[in-house]
Length: 403
Image (cartoon, helix red, strand yellow):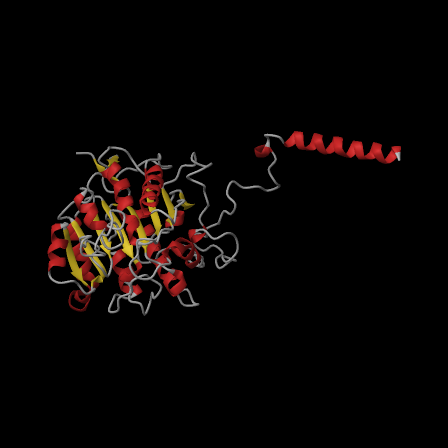
């Protein structure tokens, strides 16, 4: 009996010593072959091995490193960050976009199946020398829209005002040093937001304004989203007055967008029905120019690209893409689908036509995976669209030659 008690005592003593040895020293007890990120993808370069089990590992956007940017890894610098905003309580028809960030990440798994080289743009954004990470999602409450909108603004602003990992390069033509194009004179990283319904763009533009001031906007959507709250939903309360059909109305009233230099190119431009011509008048007053969806039949993608570039010029631009820009034949999983839109190929062509535009940040919204096909058509389309955006960003630094 005494032998058993002695052995039991030794066991308890050794257990206590073991636990005490680990107290406060978790960071020193790293597992064998530990890497900083839970999963770090290896992106193949020219003539390297491709198609190597990209379906494995945790699901980040395009298998980018996962960084907990808003919590314990605030010290990790980046140049471009993907962040989710799982919010959908501002939608008017089909909910479900709160699952958009997860769906888009799943749809992006095959982006680097054969390597990440973008043939038309002649760039591999993943091997461009920029530090690109997936920051996970902004914690968003589903119970209070006002509070959720503030959470999204705060999360985006915190990332936007980090010091980028890479300094601005010299001008590729003259060799002269580049200076930031921001209004505050600082070099900022870029943030690509995965929505979420389109309401999230109001807090995102509030964040952007803190660095760039009034910003030019390129907005791809099948709806204008500049409706007066008294028209769209009737504004039964102050909280309800801000939704996915009115956020640009509020952005204009708050001075967040550069009136007259924003262009709304809605799902092949705007193709929605209206309450009447007064909706267009209100859209004009909000500072937007319009490219109708049907214009692609007459001027083609080249004409649409020309219109956009002539409107925004060389100004800093915020890019917002509603997945319902794409016809529901190609992207059915969205909150307010409209037939008669552009194909995925047409939208990608137009986005590549923005090569050289100073896109300071971007989003894709209204992806609601519950309405998708088993083949993940919509989430794949969303991921491919962002691949084009990322490629344009990788080629165009946010700087200009000092005057």
